[in-house]
Length: 234
Image 1 (cartoon, helix red, strand yellow):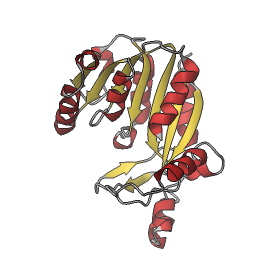
Image 2: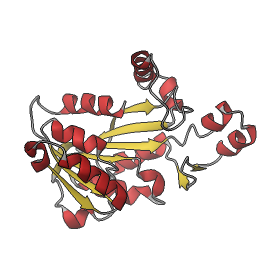
Image 3: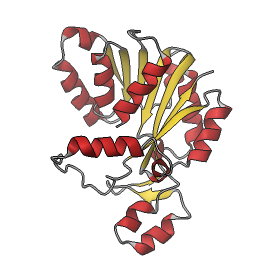
Image 4: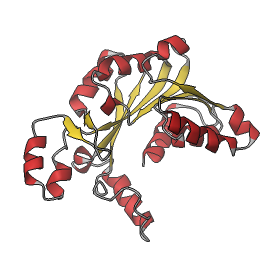
């Protein structure tokens, strides 16, 4: 879903065929970074976890030379982008699944926005702080649902205590740093309870179509497990 949404926003912001400069902060195993490099863009991936870096580099090693030349990997936590890069160095900056591990997200978001050239796209994927009661509630954990209404803290599937972001708060942050919210989507509206590693169902196309529509339609997107927020640098 995130890949489809990102493609939509890139197509809306940039001329067809333009080779973009992309920064992927917290790239994980490099799924989005590799996809964008295959599309012809020059991608820099930043990742702190050494295991994830090795997975990404192994995947990159299996790509054709042209794709390998368009992608580089840097170890880091994303907080020091100003050390590695000049302001305005990128057309697109991704930060997916990272902010939930950051106690104070605003400085990180501001630093990422400074990396954008004018008109550049900032893509954030965050845990939805306005819908934390949905998962325990749908699982029948009524006490957990009651607790979740009044907090932005939660324990993720890895057993780590992390935090979520509210749409209103991130919208205000983006406006304050000169990269106002341009579009937003819900991710995992209907499928949040699916177990990790579950095989793809036979009706996958229908599932994706339903998720895609719900992710862009009110009121469904507002209760998604994740929010995909896209800001544009003024």
